[in-house]
Image (cartoon, rainbow, N blue to C red; front, side, top):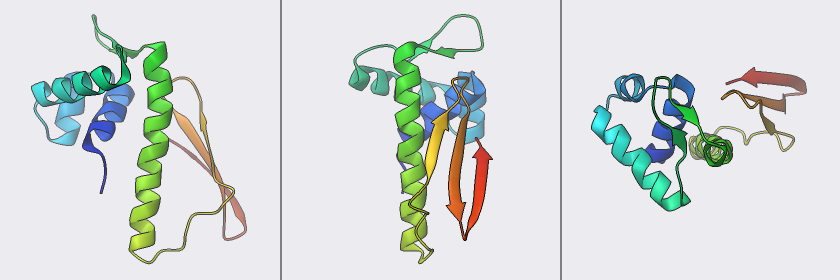
Length: 117
């Protein structure tokens, strides 16, 4: 279970191109545009600066992206829990690096793990 709109949003933020995001997700470019438009309506403003490629996040989009990544991460944790996997470490932290990347820091089986996304 995932929210496809959030997945589309994060993919677009990472790739900077509606066409590339559509290709990666197996969607049409108009579908990506419609999903982003729906999210922008819900968020009350533009999430991307459009114009010359690549598209970039607006300040509102930066905030939205931070939450979207956390929500998608929670969906992954939920899927793992439903599959019988051990719950994630309670000390898990996600840091937004401000350039579209994030760092997930957690303790897993007694070891410190850092993953860049």
